[in-house]
Image 1 (cartoon, rainbow, N blue to C red):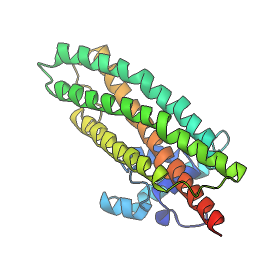
Image 2 (image 1 turned 90 degrees about the vertical axis):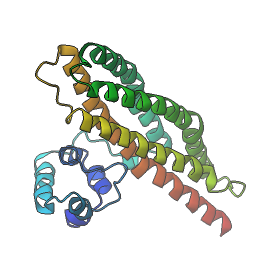
Image 3 (image 1 turned 180 degrees about the horizontal axis):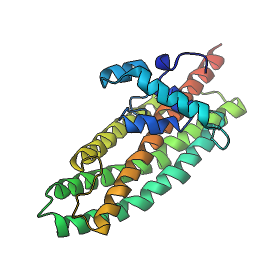
Length: 247
């Protein structure tokens, strides 16, 4: 990485080493929905010292081997789409009912003493409803279109009959839904005092907050792969094919 870290975007930094995400999570620097900002810009917005964040990132790059790190940029669009479905969609589908059940239980038992639990339950219910519809749209509409586009490129099939809105329209909707889900989970993090259970919390209460924290971390990586890698590459491929056909 030859350019200074401060001038690189948050997405570029995470792409080069996924462990950088832990530093951004620590300081609540949004590398998924707002990953196009430079590190310097993001630090300025959050009133953080860019030199401190850069130092922590350099420690990660210096001490961690990249062995075993998945290079998502080398995946085909079909492979990356399948990875997202098999890894992140599967995780979300498995975790959401469990977290929702935890929240129902702890809010009914502890809600009188900790009223924020009712609001957390209500907010997570909105996340659950949105994510269920969101993933279905990706799996049934957007990802098949991306795979079809890649097949056209492999087979050198003309795409003159397709307009850019074929991809851009569902992508725009997905990005808007990413923003909304991220905002809802940020609200939950604030309501839960950064997922910190109170001293009188029972085991289920603590488990619930730990699961919510892990869920948010997974969503950040999930959204990063789509917003910053899959979607831009798909749009770039579409434009490249159109240019080749027109020329």
